[in-house]
Length: 211
Image 1: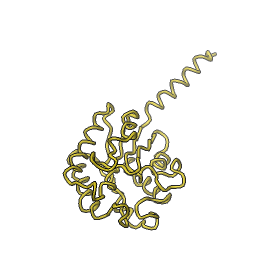
Image 2: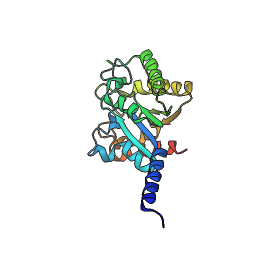
Image 3: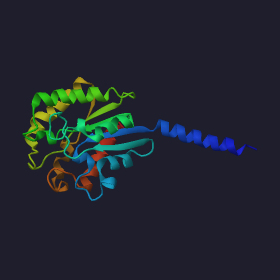
Image 4: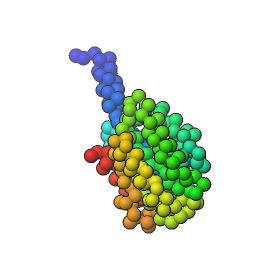
C-alpha cells in the first residue's frame, strides 16, 4: 500500500511540472488590446479570447494600455506604463506586440523615432531571461479618422516600418490589418473592435502561434 504522503507529493510534482511547461504569452498593445469599449474586458478582450482558443498549455496576460504609444515621446509612452513592467514580471515565452495606432496622431508621429523606438522595444524585450519569441502585429485598420488616429499614416508609414523591423530581427509577422478590412461593421467607433471582431482577432493570432 502506498503511503498517502507519497501520493500527495506525486500530485504536487505533476502540477508543478504542468505549470512549468505552460507557455506564457504577453499581449502588448494599446486600447485595442486592453479591450476598450467592450462590455466586459475581462471576458471579451482579444487576449482573453486568445487564451481560450489556445487552450491547455498556454497562459495569456493582457498587457494592453489605453492611449499608449510605441514612441517614447508620445502622449502616453508604453515605456512609462505599468503594463510595460508587467511584461518583465511575467517573464513570458512569447510576446505579441500591437502598438502604433496612437502613434498616427499628428502630435505623436515621427518617422525616425518610431523606427528607433520599435527596435529599442525589441531589444529591451530580448533582455528577458526566457528570450521570448516576439510576434510583430500589423494593427487593425482605422476605418475613419478619430481622435487624430488615421489610416493613412498607419498604412503608408507604420506598417512598412513594422515589416522591416520584423525582417531585420527575424521575427514573425501577424497581419491583423488585411484580414479585418471587411469588418468595419464590427468596429463601432471605427477604431476599436466589438466582441465579434476581438474574437476574430484572437482566432487569427492563435492560428499563427500554433503554426
